[in-house]
Length: 168
Image (cartoon, rainbow, N blue to C red; front, side, top):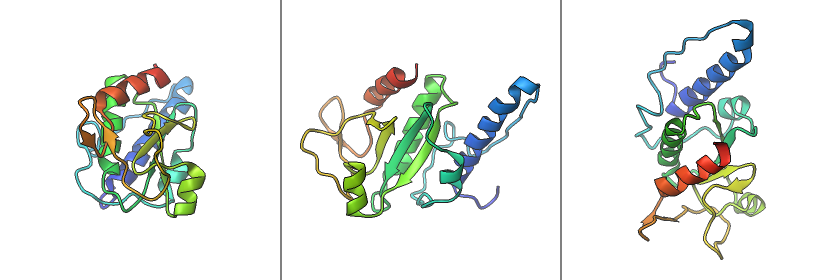
């Protein structure tokens, strides 16, 4: 997988986990060696996630998936993905898949009720709801930490509680 972006490597990681689950009842065991493990090696580059292709084909929305909606103009979605995967790992839910939805136009943002990048949803519901009166559009999202300070990603404790409620 030399030359793949971290996002592509993560997608293949998810796909290999899916195959392992599907074939486990038949006695098939899968050994996965992945140096791009999102828990131990979070994405540190600001490389953009692909618009479509591997990620959209591999990770479809299921009851055990999180949708990460993002806009290319905002650089914080890789950090949100790293936080999400770290928290899912802490909760023992490495099986939860992530589906990426790239928001490209203001019209699409309004249709998706997209309050900004990054946004995390389970079954269409936001894990960390936007503040009342937030407009929908192509913008970087501003979260509030528990101490009131602004942040480009959700407060880890708030997101952990939301994930626990959704998956545990």
